[in-house]
Length: 155
Image 1 (cartoon, helix red, strand yellow):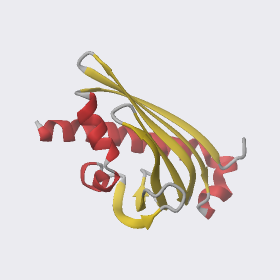
Image 2 (spheres, helix red, strand yellow):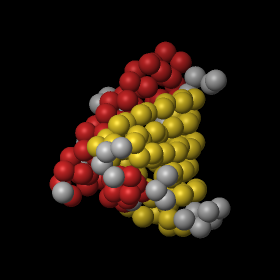
Image 3 (cartoon, helix red, strand yellow):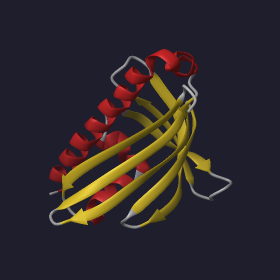
Image 4 (cartoon, one colour):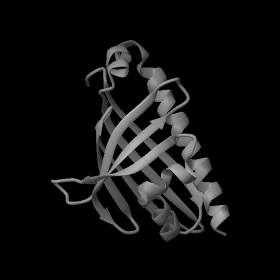
C-alpha cells in the first residue's frame, strides 16, 4: 500500500428506517445542510462522461486545519441498500455506502478507498498517516451525529 493510499471503513448504527436514511445519504447536494461541520460547499459540476450521472464539486474539511477540494459522482445505486461513488481531485478513489435494516435500527457501512492527492497530504502521508486517518474518523463521527439530528428534525 502506498503511503498516500487509505482504506477507511466506518460503521454506524442509527435508529431509523432504511428508506429515510438512504434518502438522506443519497442526496449528495444536501450534505452541506445537514453535515455542515465537514461539507462546507457542494455544487453541481456537470455530468460524468463515464456514468452519465451528476458530478458534485465539494469543499470539505476535518478537524485538522486544511480543506479538501474534490469531485464525486454516483457510479452505482440500488435503493435502499447501497450507493457507490467515485472521487477525483484531492481525494482520488471510490466509496460505498451500505444500509441494512436491523429492527428499529439501520446498520450503515461506509467503505472509503482513496489516494490523498492534495500535495500537503501526499507529501506528509508517510509520517502523518495516523493523524490524517484520525481526521477522517472525526469527520465521520460528525456525520453520524448530524444524521441523527437530521432524523430528529424530520420527525
